Image: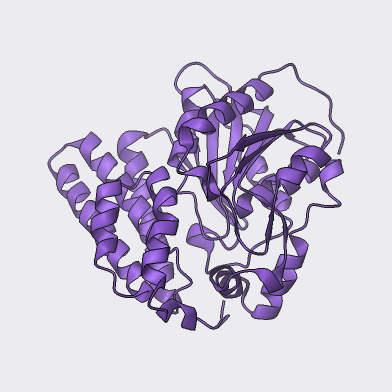
Amino acid sequence: MTGSPDLSFLDHPDLPAALVEENRPRATGAGLDPHEYTRVTSALRSAQEWPEAFRAAGRRHRAAADRAAAEGRSVSAGEAYRRAARWFHFAGLLPHPDRAAAGATATEADEAMRAALAHLEPTAERIEGESFVGWLRRPAGPGPAPLVIVVPGMDSGKEEFHAVAEALLARGTAVLALDGPGQGVLAGAAAPEPDYHRVVGRAIDAVTGREGVDTGRIGVTGLSLGGYYAAVTAAREPRIRAAAVVSGPYRLDWDALVPFVTATLTQRCGSADAARAFARRVDLTALAPEITVPLLVVEGGEDRIPGVTNAGALAHRAPRGELLHVPHGNHLLGNALADWLPATADWLTTELTRPTETRTA
């Protein structure tokens, strides 16, 4: 991937403070300690320093995890590895010019998550295939359990949405948290895939027949750009029985998008032309009526990103759409988890445990 967007906006003197505050709810909603977040970000003089500051925090937690593991304190080790994975993931948030370092950090996040699960949840399975990698986690209790596939967005990955996975597991639902093309550990290996239902289809093939998972009861949830991917999957993958879209786009307008978004897409797509073509594909206008499964759209009233038409319209245009509107919620609703996450996890679990309906492709 060799896209070289204009990154001069990263040097704007007002960007660090804006970046820190804009991402605070997202970071704390994903599990970063709010006080540590303040300590780490308060020293930033430039946005260019963000990756190394967050990597350093990740390495501190990984070192603590290594010490705990060496002393036989398995739970403490697993918790510290999980914290490390989150910090490493957030280190890669910016479209930073050092893409080799970004790729190495994504690998550190991936490896820390692997270590965390080995200590805390040794039954978790690594699932890999063409253009995807993920973790299959099963709930406690007798199975087989329904399955929800968790799809990240433009600059997120499988290490970010722990709260979503934990909420579903607590309700008796298995979870497959994915990185797909252009995401997480695969961000540098393949361009984002607008036909994401093909990725999910291969992932479903990979988990079919595995113990404890009922692949006759599969849902999908996607967050941010992952919401678009989830909507496409709900329309095109016939094995999906329900879908939840969280802070997803209904449509993108390339010329109105902010530099942060266009630069990130350009890097991950490989060129500005490829990124522009990708953005044109992100439009659910024609597809919305084809989403015939139950669909929940979760939207924050304070979620305003220039160039992004939010997915509220999707709830009205999809035949079985519902809207959960959180007036004070921002993008990803990290500032309002209690107002949507329990209800969304309940909704998905309920839909997947209803009597099976016949669905044709």
